[in-house]
Image 1 (spheres, rainbow, N blue to C red):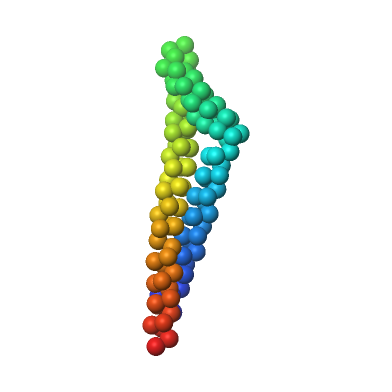
Image 2 (cartoon, rainbow, N blue to C red):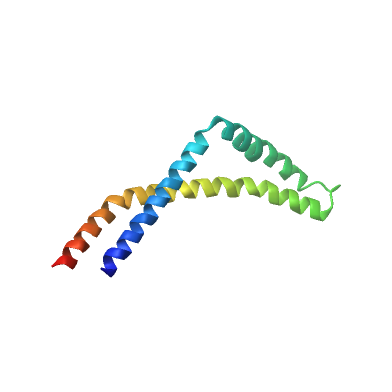
Length: 110
């Protein structure tokens, strides 16, 4: 039953990844998210922070903080993209996992 348990755990993990992917897609399709986060933070604020990171009138600490904020939008986009890719991979493997679980159960019953 160890193999079956391992495969079942893998299937549950896959279902979680699929759910997270669906949430990320739904969030990205939300008009408020697009306006506030994608347009506001990831585009407009990011450009302003990037400019501030090179402003010699700011302290080194302020420039470093501005650069970190500018990079944050890239990290957010990468997180969402990775969440979708991992969910897609899990969805593509779901049927194979279910078949492997069934096969392992049959072999364990023999």
